Amino acid sequence: MTAQTLPDIEALESDLTARIAAADDVPALEAERVAALGKKGSVSDLLKQLGGMTPDERKVMGPALNGLKARLNDAILARRALLDERELDRRLAEESVDVTLPVRAAPTEAGRIHPVSQVMDEITAIVADMGFAIAEGPDIETDHYNFTALNFREGHPAREMHDTFFFHPDETGERLLLRTHTSPVQIRAMETIAPPIRVAIPGRTYRCDSDQTHTPMFHQLEGLVLDEETHFGHLKWTLREFCRAFFEVPDVQMRFRPSYFPFTEPSMEVDIRYERVGDEFRLGQGDQWMEILGCGMVHPNVIRSGGLDPERIQGYAWGIGIDRLAMLKYGMPDLRAFFDADVRWLRHYGFRPLDVPSLLAGLTR
Ligand code: DAH
Image (cartoon, rainbow, N blue to C red):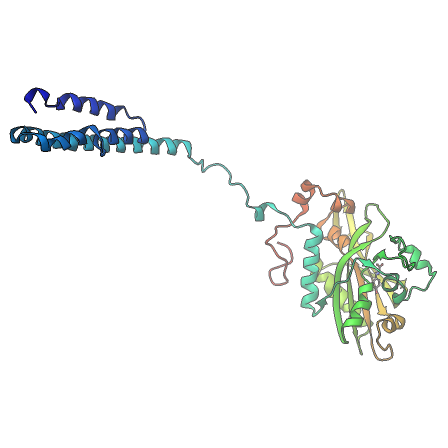
């Protein structure tokens, strides 16, 4: 190798340095690094040629090439730092979060519990605290459980009063129906639980009826207490305590009226005093009464239908309208809106999902 053929390090350096400075992103810079300093890069090539040079040439070219390599490395690292910083600035600008914007609500915050579910939970908390077990029965019932076993005689006018939804008769001629009340579960409870019995039975019920305070599907809570010594006084106390706990006001006014049900004797209906001011219900004042429940001492025929001996076993029962309780307590004027599935209504009247009602923490917060 002669002096003339020695590579022009300066020209090479200014060319490579310009290329590095022009690399606009990390991949482009990496390509320049490989082209100069990679295994087959231009500078690496020259370094490989050192072995073939004369000692004098090597003395000059060795330090020159190694110096070039070191400076290029520095230039690449500096460029890399600059590009990284530029990229960080770009991302910071692009991905910035405006912490002054309102946070989107989590599903547990946005979702709402329907007032009927809420009231069911509240009632369950109260009766469970009183020592009742919860029982359930099917929505589709037989005539036997819904009527006959409850002492509705064949052709009894009370059967008609229930506005029953019947299914078509099956091959045997039996007509199933949508239960018109939760009372059939009284019989099912007697068939499965040995006295003393103390059960509360929440559930859906159905009647062909619709106006401001009636919907074709509604909810009831049945109560049943059977043992050897239970009497009418226990019934009144239980209902008073229940209403006091449920309405969470000291002055709930209740009216017990004599009434008739085939499955109780004697029977009563209970009304709650209220007043309507505009679209609002006010409890415990005014001169209106809303019927919320029926109750009485369980009829001996019903106890017999349940397979128990009315000479030994007696007790009381009640059936309460859950939707009406909700209307009264939370001031909702029209029952039909309960089942319109309108989210605006639910947002207004619904409850927070994690505020589970309990007697200790308060039924409603
Ligand atoms: N089942 C009755 C109804 O839906 C309500 C009822 C009245 C239930 C008296 C009872 C009761 O348990 O003793 O109209």
